Image 1 (tube, rainbow, N blue to C red):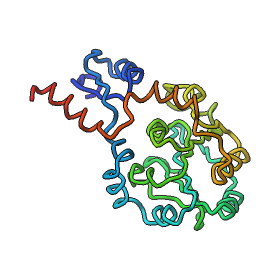
Image 2: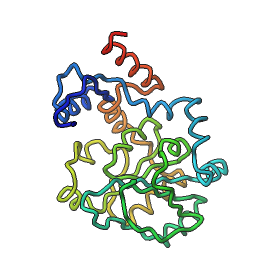
Image 3: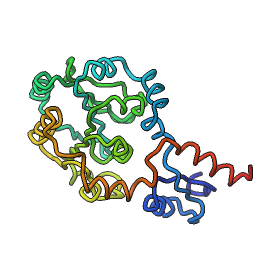
Image 4: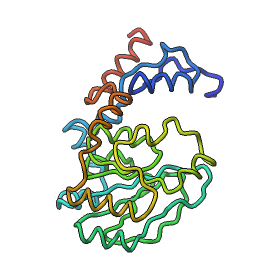
Length: 244
């Protein structure tokens, strides 16, 4: 149906993403409204944090409440289904013990990647959880090609772009809308050693500012709003369409 039926209203986060959305869905410019995404209201309000806390896995809250560094790794889904994990798990566990941190990993619901390195410091989260209930309680995000990176920018916390298979992803998975280097607000890494180094810098407060001027530029491109009113703007847009 999505190839035949054109929606009357689609939401976007900025003028640039609205133009991309218009082309992707082949709709008139007027059908795409810049409102921000309501899911991000959860990240930007005290009420949203209270709701997220009630849904967040207890192992995440325990670590966050104890003042630990909470790293969340969200690798995106690979169309090719080829192996892509390239992490020295033993050294990662040692690092987490050293810096009093925990490394959380949550795979995409469709990902069948096997993970067999569980420990109190390296924890796999259920694949069906809503990560937006987890994000507010993290110290930093590690991801690659996922749009969750754009949303996490709103929290102004460190982001690591870990892409050991960038060439393979370009060749065998879906097209990237942005070159990662163009919108990155943190280090773009490809080796386990560099990943461990970046995690150590963040945990020991030796990381540079969370993107600085690069973050300002990326935010201007990707987010017209950085408040908790996206849901209200979407409701207003819907009412304008239906004449309410």
